[in-house]
Length: 316
Image (cartoon, rainbow, N blue to C red; front, side, top):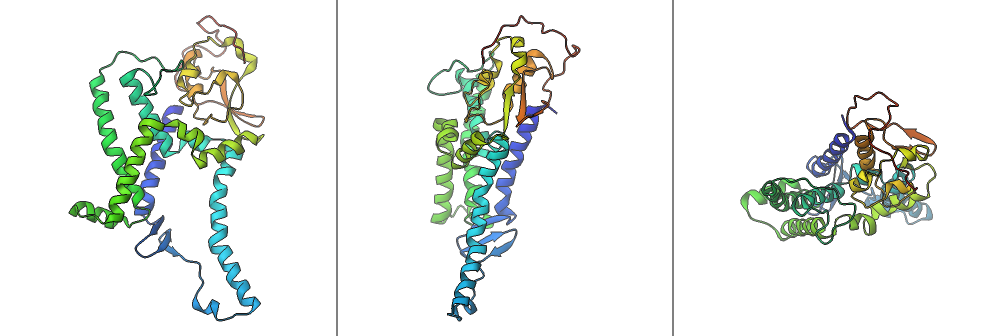
């Protein structure tokens, strides 16, 4: 399986997980009962009336300890997830799992097919070349995506605050409470506006999870990143495929630790297509350890065969 296929699989799987978590009571907060539900169990602070009977220093200590263990510590663990991911994997989560990133990539793809550029506003030098294709199909897909995806997202994410059974019951009866209506409409509008107008600018400048991974990944000496092999720079054909494949507008051949890179591996795939399977110039690297790339295409040329295209030196 190719790297692109692996990445699409992880993205879709994580979206399904996000959609199913409230349905399966893995994690949600029920606003009707004011209860936090985790793995089917109500998560409470455990501060029963008996705790407040003892007004001594020991009793106060018990209350403080219980509050720390059940309220503060879990949030510390949750908030530490993305800094730890950044230290170890950089922005790998953004490129391989993030549902918003997946939505923005889909928007980029459809915009590219319809307008010849990723952005609605300006054509960039690294926009991929678009071959002549029937636009009617992509117009239909784009319209369907604009209607269906935000609506499904609104229903799924509202399920984190209102029981999914309640939401679907109201949908079937077409009789909505204010909370359900506000949740679905609010999330749908957010998804629609960000996917059309904001896209990856949100990933770069706004998303808190992305910013934590970005900062900790940039500072970490062992963080996973994509690196070009400088000893083989002369093999670069200057096709600019790596730049055109990057939807975060990173310049992969600069070979610098760019905080916008989401470790998606698109530059690895593009270079392998240009130079041949497993002969691309880019690899994943964590500290001093380099990981072999997943082949995107098969090559009939033996290893070590000179590139069929003329090579140009690349400045890194």
